[in-house]
Length: 76
Figure 1 (tube, rainbow, N blue to C red):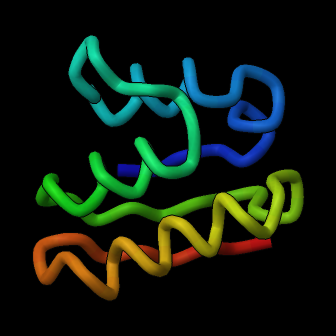
Figure 2: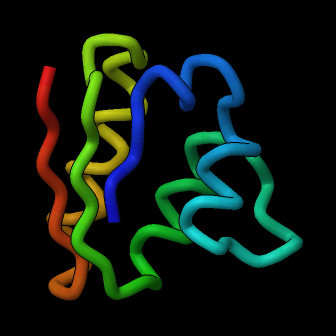
C-alpha cells in the first residue's frame, strides 16, 4: 500500500481512513491511528513523507514495531 504525504497533509485522517480501509468507528486521531495500525496486515510505503508531521510518521513506526504483520517505509 502506497500512501502520499501530500494527501495526508491535505485530507488528514479522512484520507488515512479511506486508504487503509479503517472501520467506521475510527477516531481520527493519533491514538486511534496507532490502534488500527496494530490490527492490520499491510506493507505501507509513505511517499512525500516530508509533507507530514513527525508525529504521524512516529505513529506508523511505533505501530510497525508492535505489529509483526505491518511494515512501514517512508521516502522524502
